[in-house]
Amino acid sequence: MNRCAVPILAVVLASPAAWALTIDAKALARYDNSYLVCEATIPAMRGHRDEAYLSLWRAKADAANRAQLAQTRKSKAYQSERSRILRAGATTAASAASSPIKQECQALWGEAQKFIKAKP
Image 1 (spheres, rainbow, N blue to C red):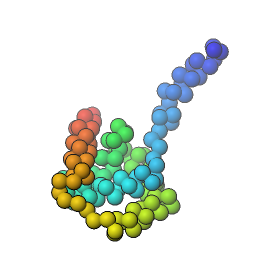
Image 2: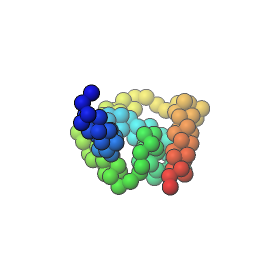
Image 3: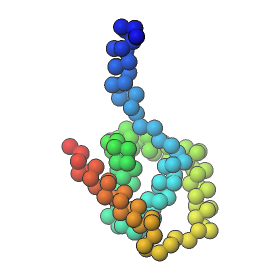
Image 4: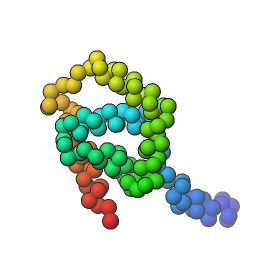
């Protein structure tokens, strides 16, 4: 390997831009829809949607990441997936309280709490 290539590669891999959070609009729309169910089930989750999402990726809930989430939520891909989910949700009723979604909500909230508390 070229002597110049090794330091350049190290700088590129160490730079924050190389590790920037990439948000999939469709996945975010599905997450937001599920999070609404979680908020209804676990009231303590209200108002912590972005923090919980970012904790899944071990990303800080700073202004830049929140702005990126807001921008993604304004995108056409997000809006179309959100409307598709809402149309499909009208035909599918939520199941009983012992459903897997409740267990998933509890797990998500537990993980989010660990990450939020671990922040310096």
